[in-house]
Length: 419
Image 1 (cartoon, rainbow, N blue to C red):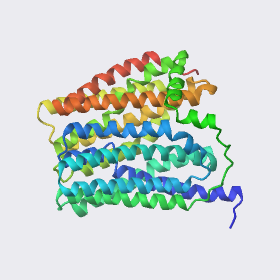
Image 2 (image 1 turned 135 degrees about the horizontal axis):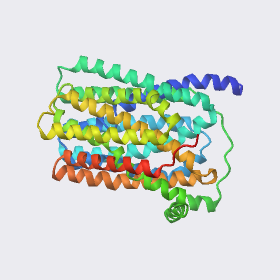
Image 3 (image 1 turned 60 degrees about the horizontal axis):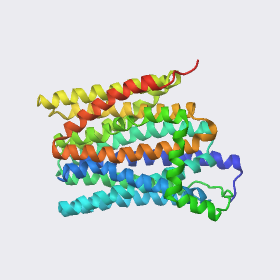
Image 4 (image 1 turned 135 degrees about the vertical axis):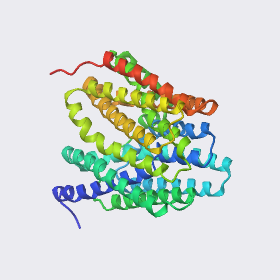
């Protein structure tokens, strides 16, 4: 059975919208930034390992960017590969739970680190393929609607499922409760993959890769030279001065989740509260920041960094006064920083499109991503070491200071929007 291009688009939009909602639920219930670090602390992994999971995931993303971007672009068909990535991520989560069931801390640590490396690599490959697929098969307006549906409907479904699982398993031991939550996440990853297979993909012509292009695509030296070459442009230097301090701000979500796990990993409400608060943050951030972003990207960046700094400061005060034992305090803190980081992320991407010349956007985007991720790897490893040798609160204190510095930096470096 063949479809006309218009009929094909009408059929694909609801299928891909459903797939994006299912994927959002899966990523929320098995979040590498919130849920898995929380579980790492619950399984009594050393704090350095729990904090270093962020670094390992970023290494996987970097490997995908450097070595797999061109092979991904060369694929004419992508839907089966995307569905396979969903299954691989689900298998990684099951492997982590299977390792945790053994109770052997060294084995759990090795498996968790390996799982995070694979999830980083596979999720980045998935993002590259999905961006290309949506660009070919979905119009810009439909993509925007799908994005808000994904955050809204996906967030609501994740909240409902987390509360339902909590009610069903609240009398179970901690490992049983956590395993059921991860199991539901795996189920939704598999459903997302099946929905992806249901779309109708048009095979497009891909220009053959020449030997010179192939060699350039896998050459680390060529990639590094191209990235460093971007510093010749003034707009890029200004953008990087603004962008790099924001890496510390983006680490607020996993490290706020770690300090919550440190206080509530044995609580029956701890994991559910973290999932609900992060999902609610994604749900609220879309309509909230869209309005402000239309007026000023700089306002979003300044307000977002101040929100992270203020929330971290309140957490630290409560922590050192010894009154941070209520799970609701950490849930509210995670909600606020999720809203803030989501807004900052969207604003900086839109600001990049404003300041980057058209002919330099692709190279500039690749360079920004490489530097930001390399900085995130080093910084998260350093903060993990601080958390391990002292306490997580010290890492949170650094993020508070970095957020205040980023606030001033964004205000000074970002050019006001032209009316």
